[in-house]
Length: 312
Ligand code: AMP
Ligand code: MG
Image 1: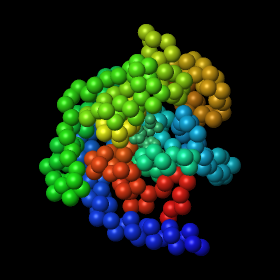
Image 2: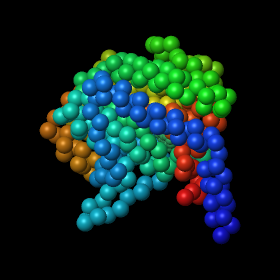
Image 3: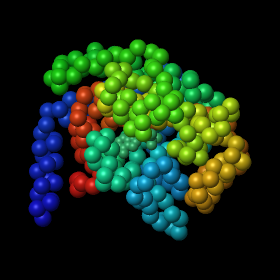
């Protein structure tokens, strides 16, 4: 019972914190600005998928929430990667505000950037290259930061936060080069020493899932990208060009020791043929946290669900 009282009093304290009010206003600006920005560029907004027969396997361990309905097994959405890839066959440029459930292991609480429930702005474009999508992400963020500085100057000042508008193009590091120079914790090390967002590109194949495409000229390396915030805020988004060759998809599933059964509905769809596409997903709570300069992601959500902690 003590736990319950603590949980409720913690929530009341959290909801009374003035910084949460600022975060929610900025969250509103992020949503409306990004939506407007993408629509203007011809991207079609699609509704989110909350549960499905197929979801992202992810490349790290999480607890899997699933249930049976009418003899079929469904999982809560960890990301809409497969739904994006299916939709982009018919609608060339799409985006969605996708709520994701990822029951991260309790040790993730210490990162300050993991929630069990969060929302991605998830974008995909038929026939696009990684470079085109990186430019879209850069331009979109620059435009958002300008908008936030115009509309929320007083609120940012109340937080003691100065939000710099970064120069484009952002710096790029190849994954293996960065790892060699800065060690296994290179993302964190580079994030802490940078004052502007930067890219990690060319990610080794075993670090990601089968749906990301291997570079034609560099076996074992994916045409993937992560954007990293500066000042120690770490990963902002992940994305990449997608695998569309059925033979390679099946080889990659086997290489990961996953089963075709796990992805049955997507694979059935893919048999009709997939066109090349590229996309990325950017977490809204991490973005709001960065804009506000919060120490932890919790302050960017009214009901934060932190790994390993009870929440309402
Ligand atoms: P991923 O494709 O797994 O990298 O997820 C895409 C983006 O969603 C990440 O770059 C983050 O911005 C965000 N994200 C992923 N996992 C979490 C989490 N547990 N809590 C908050 N945001 C997350
Ligand atoms: Mg990622």
